[in-house]
Length: 284
Image (cartoon, rainbow, N blue to C red):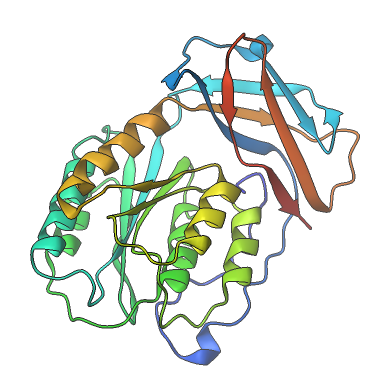
């Protein structure tokens, strides 16, 4: 999490040399915990909540909240897009159009980045407010290949953590990994230490989604099925709209051991409210 000061020596490497994809190691220190929280009533977001409306337990210990904010912090959007052999022709064009449409929904203070993947993971555009760089990256020719989903997710989370702001990663893939060097356990461990919220999007064909399910659950996101490639853009925009409705809750842990897994429970003092947030975080 950005509550955890990730070691600046981490290098984002887009190579498939085995020596480059070693087990990720973090030197971390818990300072302030930030949790993105979606509050709904019958599926509709509840707005207008304040600090006194929230309760949070860290390992069953009630915490004093320092901040509850809504739409006040710029967004870092990272698009992690599958451009392997399973996404070709018309499907690829729908994916590109969908990505461009979600960029159009960003605000002036927001930033975006692009990570594409087949058998290789490519940083198509770094995180910045220059959205045309992302659009240019989307337009580059694609060489068909296998699928390095797990490696690409790891890269996307590092990109999301590379600057201040609330980080949202939208991962598009069929969920089937055929070429990654990193293990799913290593990347899920990274997700437990990161405050990037990951939403997964598929297009109706996924034979294996267990990794994306666990990843999105761990980060407080959701795995969505667009149904078809034509609906990818609308699904991307739905993700962005939902993320805009989330509250950012911040606190400094008190009365709990700093290291290890911290189970989080977020409550709202409102009848019929449904709360969605990450289930916890891992601290060293």
